Image 1: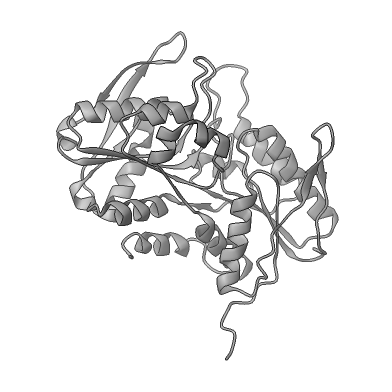
Image 2: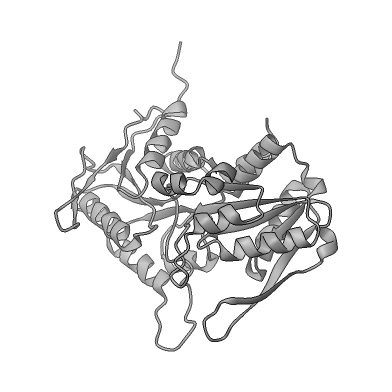
Length: 350
């Protein structure tokens, strides 16, 4: 019997930000290529937490993929990524791809006040200076960040993975639900997603913030008649402190929504600095029936144990197959854009 797997000679390494996902990507890649499935974590910590990096195999002229999200603590993980890239460049790697399942700092994509940085631009410049040839990420918070990196910057969409999981588990018909963005900024994402799956009911939660401390003063659901008596899918690229998502879920219930399902790609899940309340507590208490997240950022097991209400409603969907497919296409000079078509078709595949 001939081996029908695609040839793969690239090298995969990871930092400390998300070792389980990196290992899962390697296992997925080994299913359809000749990759051996080995993804080593090449970072250890010195006593003062400086990164101690050493690549575990020869990378001369090789296609190298460095897997590292820049979630909290983002500064630590970013430095690890730059150190890994520098090690690969000094070892004469052929091409270096930074696989960043979650690209932190993308929310800081423009100057909002005088004398403030465009941090996303600074991060892109730093990664490029380390000799990285390509960044591969998922559901970039702001698309304009792609233009801040002067080389290839494919941005995958993991939302179809969440849509498929929700459809299969809850047996929902997208033609009968409403898609809701928790803020005005996500309306385009909701509208485009609705068109993909045949949902014509798209609305959003309009909020006004306090000028003094930026807290939400008021929120209302635009077009509440679209959500009354229906399952509502709250869709966002990430969930941070959970406050906006929780308030939007409450407003949907007030407007007569039957069930509220939240689909958020990146589980940032911070603790609110003003209130001290953890996002898991906020979302556990919110009127959200099911919460679908990907594994671009790992969930803290101790925090999950401390918040059973959150743990019971959350569903984590792996992004490993999506990222492994993109890595294979890059290495074999295929079409990364074709992955979106395939993942969209998979939404309706049982």
